[in-house]
Image 1 (tube, rainbow, N blue to C red):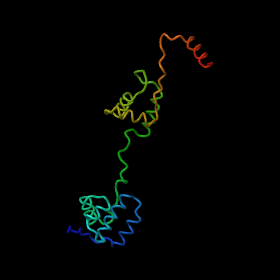
Image 2 (tube, rainbow, N blue to C red; image 1 turned 180 degrees about the vertical axis):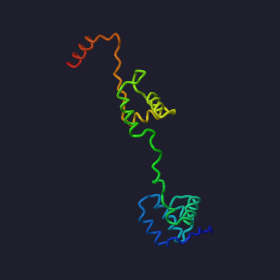
Image 3 (cartoon, one colour; image 1 turned 90 degrees about the horizontal axis):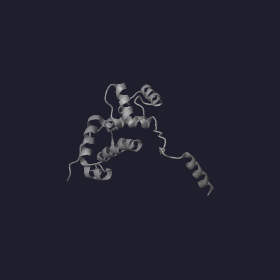
Image 4 (tube, one colour; image 1 turned 180 degrees about the horizontal axis):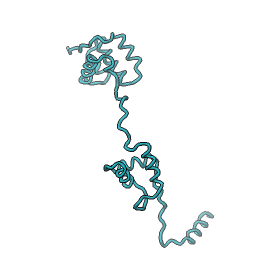
Length: 167
């Protein structure tokens, strides 16, 4: 017979059931469900089958619940917004303004040139992919005209367009 996990009496099973039913975040809801099922006397294997969590995850969750109570079941991933953007809003506006003019070496703006510009601004190397990401985030698109053949006869092309449309 499997060993039952010992839960500290932070909340009664009915309080845990209420917390489980009121939780809006799906991760927190599942964590409350696990603790609630264990508090009602269910075995760890049954709880693992019902919730889809492995035994080790359930053991870690019980350990955290025993130490911190219900606040140990909160999903804290929502509190961390991630890394701040590489360029501030002012620097992004400066980049957008710079993109309106042709680059210093001529040609068209591309991800490599944007990465070099950002590297000069930030005084550190920037990857070409990051240059591409900023081009995309600023919704900047390369507008390259279609190439024309050097020997093309414009009068013959116009005459062909007129006769092609008439048919």
